[in-house]
Image 1 (cartoon, rainbow, N blue to C red):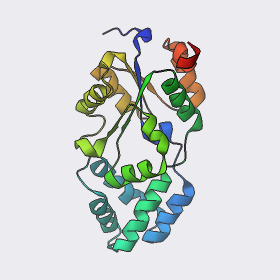
Image 2 (image 1 turned 60 degrees about the vertical axis):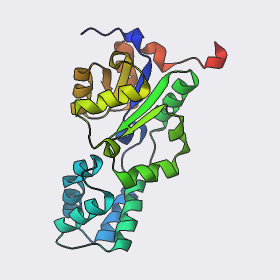
Image 3 (image 1 turned 120 degrees about the vertical axis):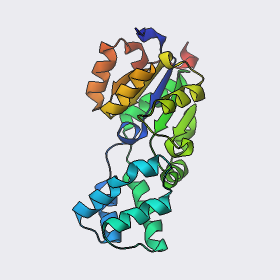
Image 4 (image 1 turned 135 degrees about the vertical axis):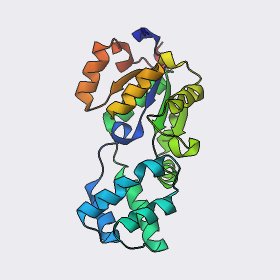
Amino acid sequence: MTLRPNSIQAVLFDYGMVLSAGPDPAAWQQMRQITGFSEEILQKGYWAFRHDYDRGDLNALEYWARVAETGNTTFTSEQISHLIDADTALWTRLNDPMLDWAQRLQRAGVRTGILSNIGDAMTEGLLNKFEWIGGFHHCVWSYQLRMAKPEEAIYKAAAEGLDTPLANILFIDDKAENIEAALHAGMHAIQYRDHDSFEREMKEQGHSDLLEPAPMSAR
């Protein structure tokens, strides 16, 4: 299927590593202190069950219980509470150029959405911290649907929430497998690596007009 670049009516953003910057090293060290785990064990436990947590197959309490098992231990309720807070802090450094662009799109009347693989407690933490999330037309948090990228159904759910055909949505994500799935579903899609290369690819794909959207008040 050939998609026309000028058919974009909505831009759909991943959260982690797109709207957010990389993980905060201080928050990661805090998790190491709370758990008492080595770097290797915490890395293993944190990621081994992350997709199940993001997909809603595990809630936050169940997720951290599984992480504890990786280190042959258990966490107290107080430890888990602190880990949830540190985990949220880990992903709250912002990618300012991307967030600024998203807000300029909103002021120009372009529909915007978030499609994020994310667990229940993390979502609650982000919503409590960032009022700007309310500026997006529709947000899909994977745990709520019990599905996750790169499952095709979650892209269709995002399109329905944006009330926009798949072929008229530009999706931006940092992971190649999620981009491939979006393209297969019928969206336009660009893999985000850094902002300079993102803007170059936007221009190469014919989306230059979206990079400098005119505010509705200026029209």
